[in-house]
Length: 251
Image 1 (spheres, one colour):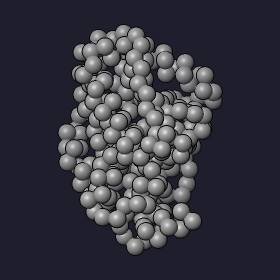
Image 2 (cartoon, helix red, strand yellow):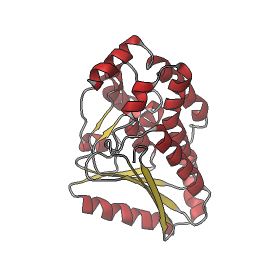
Image 3 (cartoon, one colour):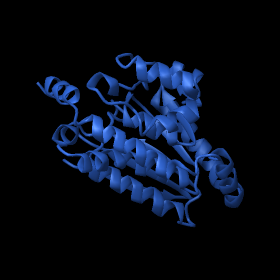
Image 4 (cartoon, rainbow, N blue to C red):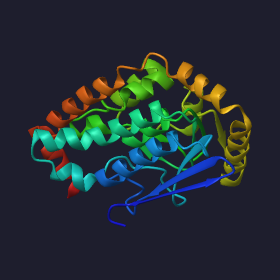
């Protein structure tokens, strides 16, 4: 469990990916690699028509990147590689031929917000507040910013990134386009996720695939763009400001 868990199941043309980690469902690099691989494999699986992304437990949906790995970075190559983990997942979600439904049951931080934004359609509970706290430790949400801006527009990205200590509640997220709908109970959330998944699974797969291309039009440069952003983050994480902030946070 130190590297987290990831399970995929397929039933009635619906694939469900469920990830987990003891540290509030955060992502060590290995788990990001596994998630990227899962999306790439499901993209070309003819048995799969739609994908549901969810996480384990009843508390946080995702606490972002692994803090322990972040603290351990001591050179640019490792820094860039670390942030490429989220870049690769977002690009795998972007290029995946199947629509991805996000099922968000709790709070989301940092890189987790990027994954939610990269989903094609998201349902959430009223506990699913979000926060981008990267600037508080001297780095920024550079890799995930394109996905957030695409879904929520530049004004919301500005509010989230610059007001880095503030939690924004689920209804704010709905108003700004991240969530399609918000539910008070997890049971209602699951019912709506299952209902939409079943409908999408019954549609013409070729038609759905073409629709996904339309929805992601204009993002063909993201492979290069997110790599450039990963390098920016990789440099900043080595700064004295960030090292001191991480050490303070660790204590």
